[in-house]
Amino acid sequence: MPNAADQQYIIPSYLRKMENMHIVFWLLKDISWCMVWKPIGIVMIIPTLSVAVWIAWKNRQIVSELAHNLAIVFWISANAYWMISEFFGFDTKIVVGHYTGKEMALIPFIIGALILLYYYAVQRPKEVKQNQVVTM
Image 1 (tube, helix red, strand yellow):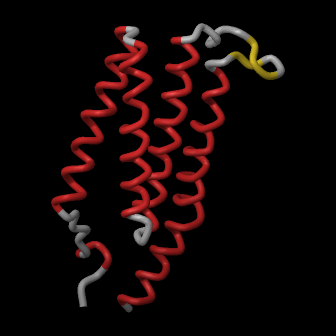
Image 2 (tube, rainbow, N blue to C red):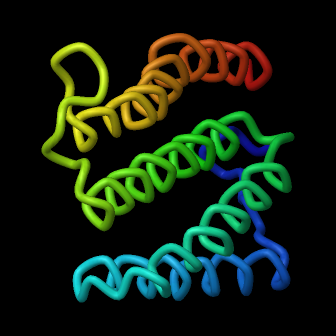
């Protein structure tokens, strides 16, 4: 019986192609942000975020993949919000309490980080323990 270290995660080619296309969308969004190409940057949020959600959904049965892909969804959301805040000039303005528009991007960034923290602090140790019991 193979142990957990010998297990392979095989990515279907259609999913790998979508992941690669996702990188193209993400780069176009960030290049547009860098170059202040507002219409292209804003439009590229849609395919970038949509594909990230789709990848997370397709990998939902593998907890580690789901956790990491959800973190990416929240990262892209934070990144897109930050870009929009700069494009529309509220990145340095107080939006809530004493937080600026840009600082509000911390909310989805932190959500993504908390998902990964939960995975590595709680879920991953359970998986390791379960694999040790199965291989004994």
